Length: 353
Image (cartoon, rainbow, N blue to C red; front, side, top):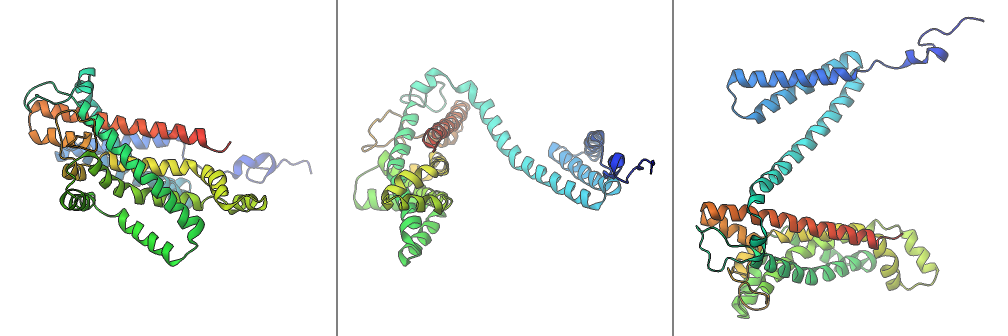
């Protein structure tokens, strides 16, 4: 009766019930050893690409971790650990190209960004000459994206509201859903050709920033519809039923209850659509045509834009033009980031308390 429970029998021996686990130092040792092995194989085999060294080290690390974990912890823990490592590896594979792209753009673009570069146009500057700026391109991008948003966002929101709140699986709703899905996959050049044939060739209204905005609105609309539709479907029906029970009409329920509840997701979808169109070049090249001078009227005359400016400078093929292209690409990324930050602020401000 006075005997103490031994290890692994419960009570004071509870620690003995814990399965053996790999010590933390083992992970670090495996990682360092795998890296050393990958570097050694790369040097001996004469592999010039550092990416190949990393792939060899990653394969060795995964294999060694799985084998050691299976021997010490058991096969079930080893499979779980391998799955977690594969998830992290996939995350790294997805992030590395993005980080590399951002780093390359920042490193090459920062030297060319200055107050002069942001406040002057390319009027009178030849491709091989230094100087010039992107003020005309920033103005054109801001106006074209704003006009496209004014056209696409209300239409997209109202279409999504109809599909979720009023469509009810009708034939019209199914047809609209089908055409929205088709429009999501339309190449940007097709939207540009459509507006070119209708706006410029048939109506003879000429090149302008507004013509480019029409093509951008076509590209933006299905993204707004699909994202808003999915967000509205996530709003619990209990909120709608509670509003109806209080005698609130349907339209007011949608405006005061449904849309504010989904405002965060809707804003994210709108920002995805804005990011989609802000970097488009093909429809702008067809419809806006490009202009080295400042044109503040988007409804008349050719304009420029940041994506078109980057394309033109890169096509010139001179060292000065390359520097301007990298600087303009950095400004375009910063422009999209500012839009996203502003949208996040609006979403948090308008979110239901």
